[in-house]
Image (cartoon, rainbow, N blue to C red; front, side):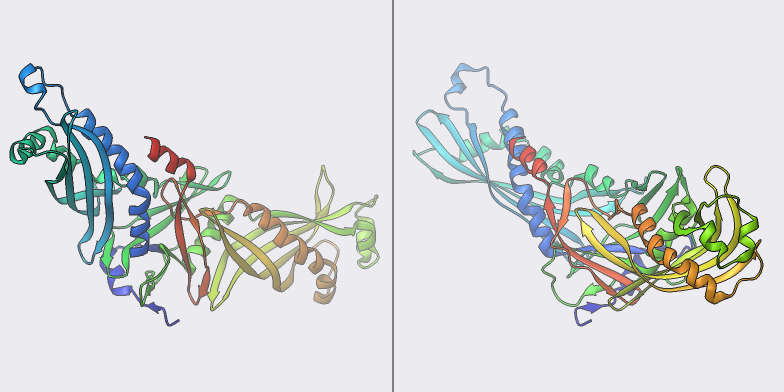
Length: 451
């Protein structure tokens, strides 16, 4: 596609040369995304600064100085921006208007400007951490209602504002402090006994297109990380050739989807029981030896289990999953009696969508079914008869059963309090791109405003 250019060189620098650590997905937070984060952080920053600056004013016990002491009476964030510095990090620029008074009739406006350089690094616990590499605050008078000794009053105010503390804690003015960054690597449920976790492999890199992070997915079954085959080729996340209007671009490799279905296989979620419309009596009309096995007419059930790991293939505008099952065909509710064992190879299309922060994966129509007889207690059966009897049940029930397993969706990498909107999924050969916008949850926005 015209909008894409490979990012393999950058991502290869991000990932240590270890066969056990290889990215299978990642994301790019674009300059548009940074602007949005600054926009939603502005009310939060104002609340934090108002609380810190007003509470830092200790009363002066000297009666002589009480009439001259400058008091901050209002805090208003005028400008709040977050911009990208390629190869380095981010620059946070804040302009704060302070209403200052030393007497009821004397008011002036001071401007506190903060210029801070930030970047994200990986700490020894392998969590991402937002750190400040440089911070420069300045304080100047803007206007006054009366003639004042600005030099002395500015000096007094400098003493009242703990500039070092403001710079030390400047990162907390953003709405994604380290607690939210750590939430990126939290385990998320897929099924009751299967979880997914996205682990950052290294600190992000910074290009003109955005902040780039590579992730390795792990899956847990019953609380234990399951071993999965490592992709033979490290995932090279595509990068927009030009500035993207989306806040965030997520990308998932073909290997990610294969690993997901392998984890579901390991958890037993792909082992399904398929109720056929056939009964033992109707089968006996086509397979004569059936008559001697069952004295009453019972529904026929196919109990399918995986015989080898599933495989997902991604092509342009198309995703398919290949399932390799063995179905024990039998009857009996309390005591199941199998009379046939059939190998079933299913190729089905996948449909992908996003709801909030979850990727909804559903099995669409089955494209191909191959049946082969494994064992039989009722004599040899022609392949054509097997297909006539059992393909309709498999075609209808396998997608329905797997879609029940996947109905809750798979959580995408995300940080707490943000959801995804304006999603556009595109499937390419070997990977899936998900450009989307960020949206701060309403309750978080209200909490930050009234904090």
